[in-house]
Image (cartoon, rainbow, N blue to C red):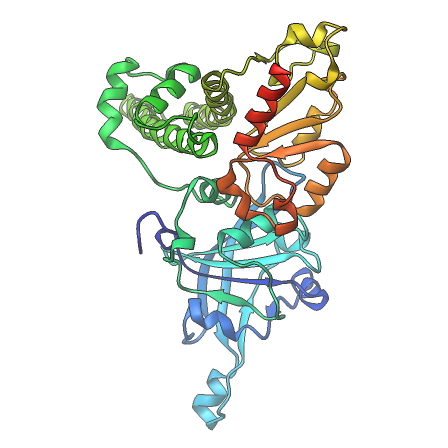
Length: 412
């Protein structure tokens, strides 16, 4: 196990595409996969029927939350007894997959992932074919294509490719794994600065930037945006862990037996995380635009009381019918997209060609083709471009390129 790498969470991973027969198998009452010898690389040589505790997930782009169910996977050699009793020199490895909500969703062509976690439990993921989440999982574990019908297995997860950066954290969270990285050296300073409470997001974003000295977006806005977001995420999780721990201890010490206060505390924390991530991204983008001398309006009101994240050079210019439309720019920012990117299409009627900035890696070609068709230009920090296909990369725009475009239109 190596801190900061996938091996911190996984001992190994196996991926395959479900064939028509296999999809039928996990739908039916048979449930046993044959041709899984490659799984020995992560599950080991079975002695009898080895039962692994497992968490099953079904993932698709249409739903914000995965379908999740707990259960077991059974790993065994169907020929072990015959080999021991009659000397038959062959093995027939099988993986027993139970019927559950996840198996009922599986279809031919979907991606099946069996990941052995560091605690000796398994993560069994079915990701819908041709979706963004499918591409992201393959990228996370270092697979470009699955060329053969069996399992492709990877048990070495400590190479430089397996280092957990910002993009990897995004994908890990989507499969239910929380990357554990904290900055304890900053905790006392944060508690003192923010009076032992969660500060406003704009104040916390400014603080996060202040902890990374000698980094200016004027030199490299693409790298600065990722570094600021990554630092804020780590600092926030550090502060959150401490403050939530205190609240949980106070509830426990008060002898609270009702589960409702605990549930509300967790729900509040999850909601805070979601809203804070989007606000943090906008805060750091504001800093980039300011440092580059670009004028803008944040959440200015357009038609039908809609509020785009950023209008350039300003909302006053947008509402001035004499101001040329060719000099107007709209930027929406979403830390993750899924299907929500379509929400931006009617946010600024005067600007037919819209820009969308995200930090999401490996969005599917289906999605980016739809964006092109709807005149939406995707903008990502350049460090995330390699997570996309070569064809997609030729079309993607970087943060620096976008800032240059906004400035050129402003000064035209």
